[in-house]
Image (cartoon, rainbow, N blue to C red):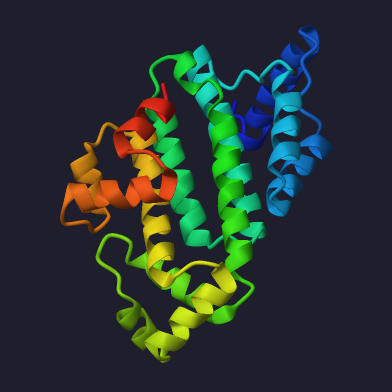
Length: 247
């Protein structure tokens, strides 16, 4: 007798899984509800997105592996993929969205206990929505959007107004005036805010020292980084980490 085809193996496995779900009265979250969550991420509606996620998570989770923690990880990684695509649809640069997704997945894989992943999906949704809203503001002006892209691509080094203006073929004073007009902040403030936003992730999700984070983001001195961070968020990097560290 010849070996069964891959298609027939998959079909039988699907049938067994379907019967297990019926036996325990488990039904996957309705597609329309998941689609609604994606739509809220695209729209940048944090409150509605989190409410919909809570509705989805009030149901029993699918069994996606023989071991509970592995099953939970698989489910959250699947959700991360959905949120990433929604963020890109909402206007976020695909490279940034995929990089954030990769970072989340590494954090999920590193978890050793189910408790470490408690509320992790809410954090992912909130972070992707932050990016959607930020990009929506920037896209009101093509020049500012291009400048912001340059800032993010060079986030690990010192970034100057003159350098960025030259890359865009405009004068530094003109780029500065457009930033103030379109973003309500100076170019330097935008650079600092972008670096601080990046730093918050490392403070929440890694054990890197404040000095290591500062150096990664192009700050020569930790004290300078700490001053910029405190001016932007109203607290020191150390205080932020204590308040927001992911368990």
